[in-house]
Image 1 (tube, rainbow, N blue to C red):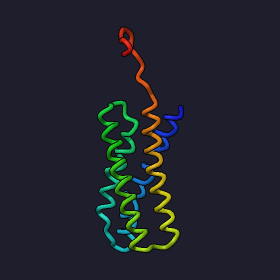
Image 2 (tube, helix red, strand yellow):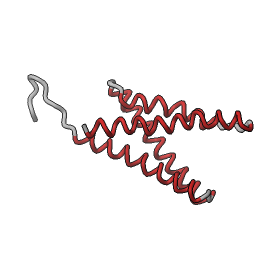
Image 3 (cartoon, rainbow, N blue to C red):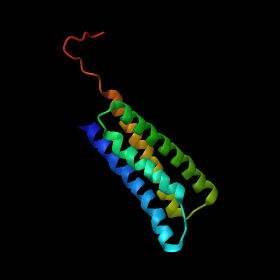
Amino acid sequence: MKTKIITYSIVVWFGLQALFMFYWPIYLYNLNGFKLNEMLALGCVILPSSIFFVANNKIIRKIATCLLWIYAIAFAFIGTIANLVASPEPTLALALTIVMIINIALLTANYFCAAEKKPELKKGDKQL
């Protein structure tokens, strides 16, 4: 049960981030013609990754997990640089820091919960 709660919270959390990354550039472009094509492309990659995180196929699930880890680490790196170098408003810096912490905490919790599960022996298998 704990694993399902963490898994679906990851799907919702990263899905919301992907939807934000998908719709924010469209909003800015309609508002004043400002283009953020990279953010739009990243949203198009993260949204399927967050959805395929619960796929039944192990290979697809592992690829989605790897893409979410890469995104979380890159976001943490770029967010830290933005906090330190660009000196945004304090509320924006706090929001970036909270998002970074939640991203990595959710993926780490999922890793340890998935590592706790021991494979069940099928009929006819011998325990080592």
